[in-house]
Length: 263
Image (tube, rainbow, N blue to C red; front, side, top):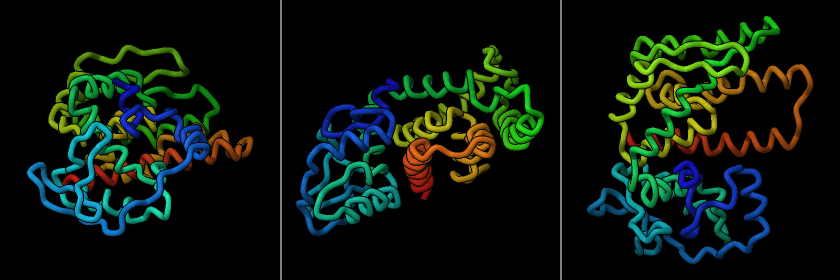
């Protein structure tokens, strides 16, 4: 199921889970030419669909590309409208995510939910550095409020560990997170949560964005405390920075979809 959630394109899984490598591979492939002039949002039985010159857009699996909220459909329509003479799937992260939700996640939402919980069982923000002291402090400042929120709001009291030694999280904590996720089991919402979870390595950060505790950019910064510390000490690698920027685009797209679903 985790492979399935790496987006769908042209009826098949994406060529690479890494957005930078994926973009490089797609750049070597000829892009289809834009074949439409007018993009619109229209009501359908499933909610709201996007039309191109009056024809309803379909997913790679040939389902109607429809979402329950008009605001979400408008996000997709904006991506189609922004295309130039050639179609660039890399520049359409919301569309790709919705395709994945309709063609894949909807078939087995429980598997996606369980995969998010597997991330929670070894959540990024539970693993702390032993040294240097300043990094320890930065992690605590960034991550402790999220853990406190998970304990107080979700009833999930997670344990901390130093270094990379795995700590077994209490079943009660994971069960509480499972209950919370089960109330967000719509395919589109689960797909968005999974994307944010996998990009940050933290189910708690994804849920914090979904609940409004953190903005998407705040969560992104919080997720990169360790990386930013290393950059401050040793400098930034250009290729790594480019990969991070591409991943942030996918993160923002997932958060934008979740927000649109509530409008």
